[in-house]
Amino acid sequence: MSLYDPDTIAAIATPPGEGGVGIVRISGPKVWAISDALFQALDGIPVSERGHGTFAYGKVVSEDGSEIDTGLALVMRAPKSYTCEDVVEIQGHGGAVGMRRILRRALDAGARMAEPGEFTKRAFLNGRIDLVQAEGIFDLIRARSDRAAAAAMEQMEGRLSKQFDAIYEAFLEVAANLETTLDFVEDELPDEVFSGIADLLDTTFRTLDKLLDTWDEGRLLREGARVVILGRPNAGKSTLLNALLGFDRAIVSSTAGTTRDTLEEGYVLDGIPLRIVDTAGLRETDCEIEAEGVRRAEAHSREAHLAVYLIDASQLLHEEDRVRLDKLDPTKSVVVLNKIDQGKEVVGVQGIEASLVNGVGVEELKRAMADALEEGADLHAPPHAVISERHRNLLIRSHKEARQAREYLNENVEENAVLAAEHLRSALEFIGQVTGREYHEDLLDNIFSRFCIGK
Image 1 (cartoon, rainbow, N blue to C red):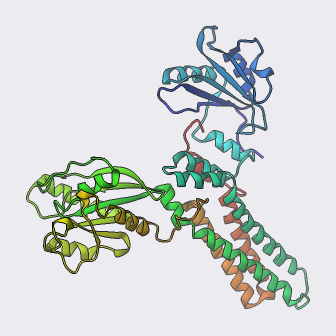
Image 2 (image 1 turned 45 degrees about the horizontal axis):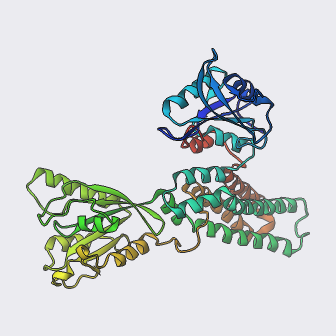
Image 3 (image 1 turned 180 degrees about the horizontal axis):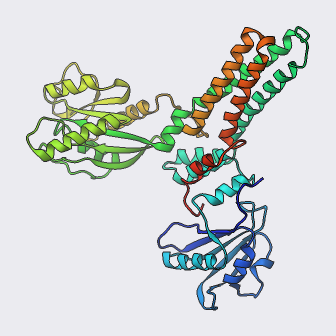
């Protein structure tokens, strides 16, 4: 049952700026009166009298009858619309001013401005989708790689929801079976009843663990990774940035200290969206500006998911490099021995040998970066729906409660059945919050407030 006031909402559903088409979406019980007031079809048939899935060509008019725009009205009748309500979309010429005028006319005719994500929120409250599918829509909009988009589509189609539902149904069955045993006299039930309950729990734990294992991949696909390029001046950091991007983004010079501030660019590696940060050369300096650049480089290094440290291999290892290498986390860093075309003087340091100015070693570096970032995530498998941080937190809490129930069953089934059932009810509550079987207003606000207004 819906828990919102059944008013009529409207919003611009297309991005701001110029475009061939702009859309104003209207949803709710007053949609027919509002649409008839603002749209006049060329064939004279009111929007309210048209069938589901039909278009009408005509004009959008102001309250005094003057023309605002020409375009189409798309009719979607409940429950076959996105929100499961009666919906009309007015499609006019793209442009910020024109769209605002149509929206203002809809608001003046009786609609209310939609809140962020309110159309999708209504789709959830009316049973069109669950919370996991709603989040899949958000992930698709925000996807920064083909792999992330494919994973979001699977989530929208309910693949992930089915796995959560299976866990919920299994816990529900165990809880129901446990509570049923409370009606029997002690020692009246055969042992296989309780062993069957335990086996079902154990099987469900394996499914739950597999879902938890997808979190690392989900984090990378949704949030991306920050990669910082570090090294002493003139080690080839800017050359590396340009080599990865495939164009000259950073100024490259033989003069040490050319880069004095950070330079960031987006890049997709093996389906992982990256934010690559080129930094100032790490060295002691009396120059106030360069010193600030070094400070920023060190700050980015602390926040990065991965550090690529460059060494000029044509020279003996500098003491500064030695100190920095000792501080690097080997699980979160890749070392590059650059300028090997000029000879190799560095000894005792393991890394990817490269001549970045000639493109040598770039592909090997990309593979090493991907391997380091993909630790704990199988990004070479076919794209599949993966859990988010919200899902992970709730799964961990549910797992903990169900494990406690399992431990009670191990100790003394008959005596601890009540306690085990209570923990399973808590586990069910957490799983239910993942898909929205159980929810509260704060949870919905947290999820849908991140959406754009027209979605």
